[in-house]
Amino acid sequence: MACRIGAHRGWTAEGPENSTAALVAAAAVADFAELDVRRSVDGVAVLSHDPEVAGLVVAESTAADLALVGVATLAEVLASVGDLPLDIEVKPDVDPAVLDEVCRSARPIDWVTSFNWAMVDTARVRRPDLTTGLLVDEGWDLDRAVGAAIDRGHRYVLPHHSMVVGPITGVDVAVWTVNDPSEAGRLVDYGVAAVISDRPDLLREVCR
Image (tube, rainbow, N blue to C red; front, top):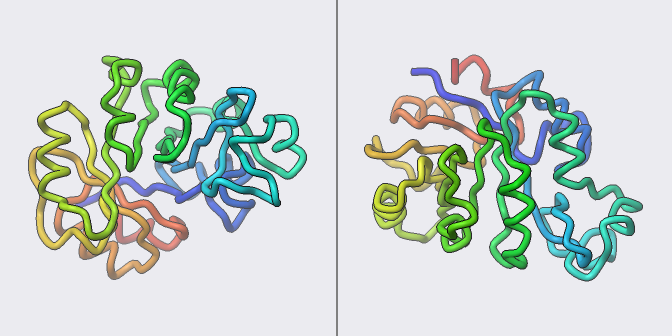
């Protein structure tokens, strides 16, 4: 069974993680790209996995200052990736006000996901044409996450790949972060809908 391949923070063989270059390059090897969103002090959705970049605290820095150390904005990326779908992960510890820009900017082909389930449950995110998903960290209760996704109308659960030990029904499953083709094959056999990888180029054959 085929599944979709996601480029984790873009195709980082072609550019720094969460950069416009890496995310644009992902279109060559993946079906979608995952990225991480935080909020600058002046209220702009910017791309960063960590709360600090090059000595700057993202939440305390302007988007202009962050741009000087290579931090892209969500708007810049959306303007550059064409029709490549994006899994827009809103970091769990950010100001929820970032959701206003995320949801205003996200296209029907994109997803909005978070480890902070309350973020993707808010009214501002629950747009009829916007796909949402619940991220599930190692050690969490996957069955609870599946039940919450079904009850609340989220399309995806996104667990760490090691948590998936059999088929999961009732919701689409996108696993992270899988770089071993044999592990990807195991998950494809369980019927996962998507595999997110640092090396999407290595998984194309097994996921097709």
